[in-house]
Length: 387
Image 1 (cartoon, one colour):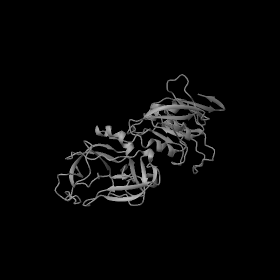
Image 2 (cartoon, helix red, strand yellow):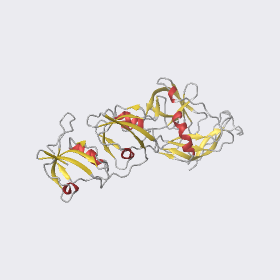
Image 3 (cartoon, rainbow, N blue to C red):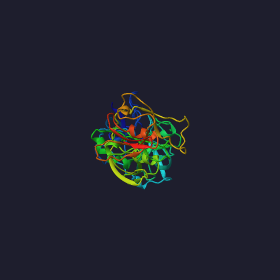
Image 4 (cartoon, rainbow, N blue to C red):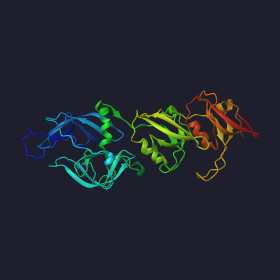
């Protein structure tokens, strides 16, 4: 659907400060697209910024759904000016920030002055400012004190605070802008008409604290980029693309800005003592295959129900009951058996057996396997170890 864009025009007969007539009721104001901010793609550069304003029709060329941005193309009567921009590496908290926008019938752009509050927000996708941010300037530029473009103002969500639409913080002193230096490398793909989506890896964590928890992998989704790269339940992520990782939040900061199709390098520590360091490469995707629960066909012994306590000793994976004709029954498992180690049968001569200290360990390994996968189990029966 075409969108209205305002731009300078030397041939217009109105005065330099006179606003154009209001657009039709169904038109959108400058810089707005439902739920998304806007980048304007000029077909040429050069020219000056003087002169009155006219309305141009902008057509959607590409989208970045990860950052809530669209790329528009228009055909101005003369080349549009290209502003100077500032690289993200030059930004620092406390520097001046000016949010600019234009509303329905304003005779001049609306301006809100503040400072940069932070330079790595929205999980690495944006900078933060306390300048007044609202629908009046969504899609407009965030400028520094020299008039250089810092980024494009966008209503990004604050999901850790339960704010998922991206508009709840408007006029709160908390606003976001996507750095222009992050967007420029993406322009060729957007100009080609691509729709860029957030990249997914396909892992789950053992920790209950989604911010400060240890980035130890509990589940690896079957047929996911993580599975294809060889990541395993029990691996602890220590670095992504050379960036050190200490917490789950660090992993999210490193992965959230990345897009489907991007290849990332991960360093993980593996083994009982996490002494083995492994480097893998995974190519992110825009969607994961539907998860199918794998069934071994047994019920473990549960001592008693209690709140999850990290200081308590884990319950061993002791078999309480075996479903008739199940994979567990066909393998010869019996009530009373204790599963002490497991590994996916990958075709290797000697697959690495992973210790199973609890039912949670076993569930984590099985949860990452595709249906019909073969599993090797080490069990303790009558004080004798069997496989």
